[in-house]
Image (spheres, rainbow, N blue to C red):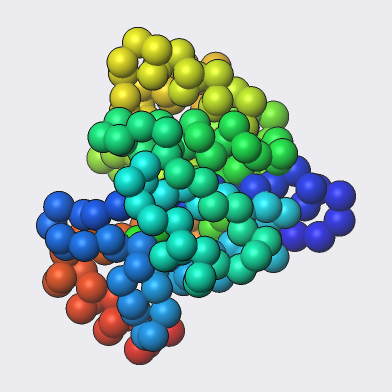
Length: 211
């Protein structure tokens, strides 16, 4: 995306620490000689005017700053064990963008075309969120209006409602995007492929060899 509209867009990547199943920090796991976090950053680089990465409260920032471009803002979560919603709030509180893509650190195949599509659909709304035919939504592969999402997250957290779904319920206008529409830009929907197990990691290596 070019021109003045670029100023509006940011990217927020959540890299909140160890996975219970992987037993290590997924963000720093190496896929094709590059940390998973770096794969995600590469996918949004040049698409947005700012990139913010939020890591866990007990993580060591130096482990990340050594591999991040200097233009990326690195923040620590303010609380331990409160889940991704708290990390989203920390990240958004630092952002200058009007709208932001929110992504997990373990989705190395996110398609830029899909992100552009969601960013465009989010204009005039509080969020654009992919939704599967089953009704399941993808809140961590979505676009949010920063001011609206911050306010909604604050309300949810104050109520000790810590799911991202709790925040979404507080939003006034959400555009749900059928995955069948997204399939036109990403026929295999690998945008939503994330790595939760060793088997997933092996699948990612196989997928990478085919791209």
